[in-house]
Length: 193
Picture 1 (cartoon, rainbow, N blue to C red):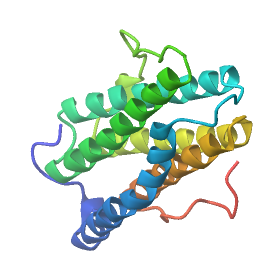
Picture 2: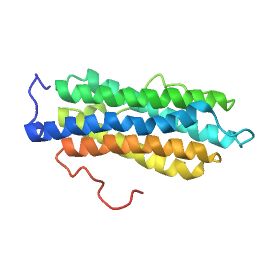
Picture 3: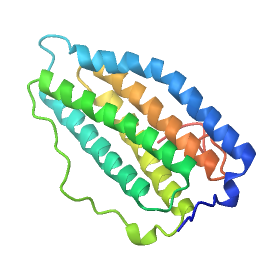
Picture 4: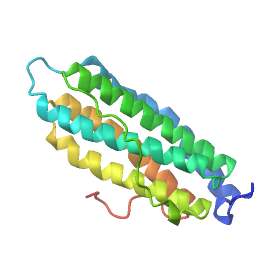
């Protein structure tokens, strides 16, 4: 358990960089709003919606899982105050994504995916703050890959644009976690796969 002490990797320069990056992320939310607006306003009339609804619901299910994972981390007692605040901020982003995805599914005539009653997280591996942060970083990396793969699949290209804006948010989350963990905040290569 943390007992209020931050691990050594949370030194002041990393802490300042982390919360500076979070401030940029909050300012960057303006750009993400453009994608949210595209989703919220609805799509082109007559666009083939069935496949798009499946993709949106898959994304919503992943967002709901992320919300549950962040809740688990926040309630674990393993996170220091700053890490917990950041986790809850990122959880809030996932909640916004999930809400907008649900609204869009409804506008397309579908039924939004519901949260599972229980998620099977490997909680036995979460022994310290660093474990929770690595777990969250892994989820964010998975979200980046999922949205990257979803973007070209949408029939309605406006949905591709909106998914790409969410992808950008997930990539920023991942980069911030990488930095907090003492890794280079940039992705390991020039391209994501």
